[in-house]
Image 1 (cartoon, helix red, strand yellow):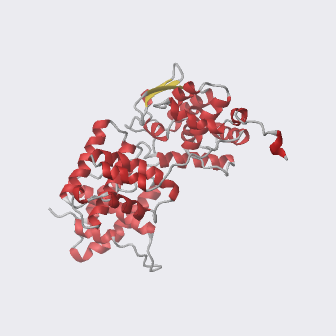
Image 2 (tube, rainbow, N blue to C red):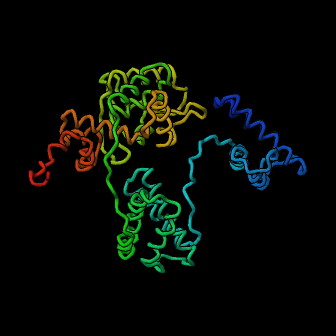
Image 3 (cartoon, rainbow, N blue to C red):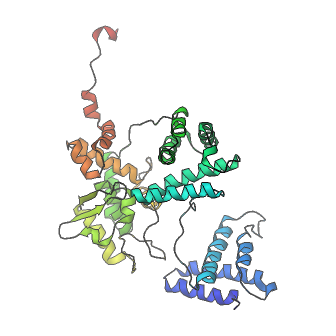
Amino acid sequence: MREMVQQIGEVVIAELRAAGYMESTIGQYQKSIKALSVLAEPGGGVYTVSLGKVFAAMTTSPRTGRFSAQRRFDFCRLVRLFDSYMATGQVDLATQKRGGGGAWPGSEELAALARSWAAEMVQRGLAAATRDAYGRVARAYLVFLESRGLSCLSEADGASVLAFLASLRARWAVSSLPWLISNFRPFLKFTGRTDLVDALALAGVRRHHTILPVLDDQDLEAVVRACGSQQVRARDAAITLLAVTTGLRACDLVSLRLVDVDWRTQTIAIVQQKTHNPLTVPLAPLVASRLADYILDERPASADDHVFLRVKAPHTRLGDHAAIHRVTANIFAKAGVADVKAGSRLLRHNAASRLLRAGVAVPTISAVLGHASPESTNIYLSVDHDRLLECVLPVPAGARS
């Protein structure tokens, strides 16, 4: 049976309304459906997957004659919904993550190696974000090998590792290369090729531990004051306050579920996404108050049991750490704090440094932050100026002249 553009469009619009999409968003979909209907007219108004590909490729604005990112976004998202309906009879409104996971090698042997690495990471119990980062770099290397005419790993040598890293320098910041190598090394170890692992050391990339930034008292007070006001969403205030007071990672904030909150004891108990270790943190009165405001008055009705949901439909869990960064950046802007990068990493460092300056023992801070190893907390010693000054030796009298 042939499916008509107009008929599928009616189903899509009905599903969007049922899911609670804003009328302004639905209006944008309707405009795209109208444009797709015009394209389908020569074929009798019938929709096909090939027609969808042509429509999605129409990224040039007829008004300006230039590429339009908005046009590409609108047309591609409509085609995705139409294609899901054609394939399953259902309109798939699930949100799509950015990036798409990166390219996969075409060679069967290299593709099989990538799949084996993915299965191995699951077997090891690595967090989803970690698997994504490790897998993306591994597949990029395998695709690079293919570009050099290699179809299996046995044909690669240490020089291929160095050439791969060199190819990335044009697209990656130098400061990001240590992170990339740390994500690349586990895959090379998995292959059992010690020569490839040794080649990483020849790249000469070293990680530099800089002094971590923290909020001064005035900025912290402004952020907390903004979170306690009615100028910001209760959801955004609760997320920011949790990060400020507990130092929870962004991945744990995204994964937080309603059952993790114990209102009787005013605590949150989770299993950390990164370390898989259990962690219980207290809820300060203001945090508990704003979290309750969100859950009782602001949180959309949804079958999703994650605490923090998307404001716009579909009302599902937040996508990733980028969503947390947008929330905290918005709070910082409203608080008038503009000289720092308002990410969960900064807030995590800030929580640790304040505990340290309050005289809390490093092992205790390590437990509060949920570090797998107490040694991970040592980096926060760099912000404890008073203790660092105690380590400074006096300048010899003869050197002053």
